[in-house]
Image 1 (spheres, helix red, strand yellow):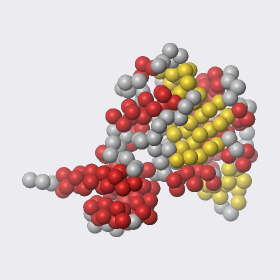
Image 2: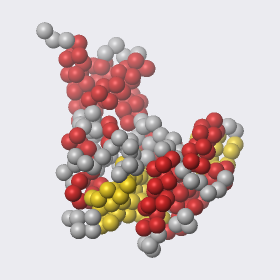
Image 3: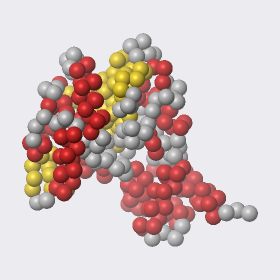
Image 4: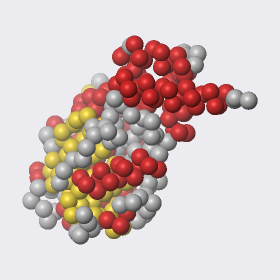
Amino acid sequence: METTTDVERIEIQLLLEAVYRRYGYDFRSYAEASITRRIHRHRNLNGYRSISDIQHVILHDREAFLRLLHDLSISVTEMFRDPPFYCSLRKCVLPKLKELPFIRIWLAGCATGEEVYSVAILFQEEGLLDRVQIYATDINESAIDKARQGIYPLEQIQEYTRNYHKAGGKSAFGEYYTARYGHAAMQAFLKQHILFSHHNLVTDGSFGEMHLIVCRNVLIYFSKELQDRVLHLFCESLIEDGFLCLGSKETLRYSTCSTQFQEWDPHERIYRKRSNAS
């Protein structure tokens, strides 16, 4: 006898197939539990009676699709999230990058930009920002617009300030934003070194010649097969001796490209591409 769960699983597969064939966004290899939870939330928030109703609407209404895309791809983020990671990045990675005349950084899955500005501040404090180009990408266009604006609610800044100091911040955090009308706008000198753009990790190609790739808390939403494909994409995008930073619950250990990296800080999930990696 067919259960409700079985029916919903079919509906979700059909919805994701419709999204891919109509708009080219491929969520078919995302982790089932995560994508199901996000679709259920979208259905409840928008008053759909069933998942099939979502499919019918988004096929004919691009605005409805964009609302669905937002709910499928939005990430939880904050400035200097996981402060020990930034301490390690400052102490273990930046001294190596200082040897380079120019530094290319890719922040994949940048969401609304909080992590991008955190990295820019870190490089500013180490005297490296003038020779840095940060490429910040995400699948979600509305998230990229917010990241590009760099304006965040002031009530969040207190938490960001605490994170910043735990991460070894060297200045007053207030030097990096201007407060106005209940919001904090990130300083222009940080934005000058950041190029925001759309990129789909599932379907788009590599970014070439990167010295550092940061992609934290994104792979957890992907299936094992998709994780492996994306890790190969990062490997192709890094120069020899380049660094890859993943989230605390993500690892290279089970990837088919794991032998091409060495663990640089195993606790903070920082890896370095081997100089003889192909």
